[in-house]
Image 1: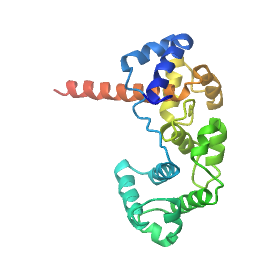
Image 2: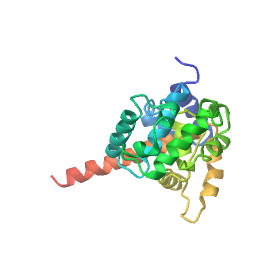
Image 3: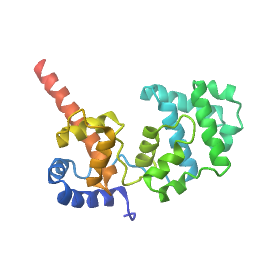
Length: 225
């Protein structure tokens, strides 16, 4: 198995949680082997660029709409989405894919940063998460949340927790019994107990959220029979 793979990191995270947070470890056990399956680390700068562009396209859109626009964008740039192919197309033509002016600017500035060597997406793997986020958010249209999701899902960064994510915020408060008055800055500090496996805990909280939604939907279905 690939060294330091998501599966190996999941096993290490379980060991860490057993020592640092027994209650969360117990909640995670029924889902062992399924928590890190969403992590698909990209191996090239082009693959990372495409993943980040997809994230930009998806902002404030449904999954179906975002997929349609992304597919049209790939067609507009000639079938191969790269920084070079994006910069070869006029912004007016990029907009015909269904992109807003702001998203065209964001994607173009990202392509320019990569082409000029100002930004190397693969190299971000070697930086602490906070520094990587700072580098990404220099690009217009890439906020902290988008950067953190990119680190977790595309780069496979092992130690990222995003208190700005509404689901993570709610799940953490529920797990630790924290009132709404506690700031997100304080949540970030408290999440340090799970370091260096905060990405795993993020994935776990998302998993628990969806399990809860499925259980509620099933109960509702049974109640209507």
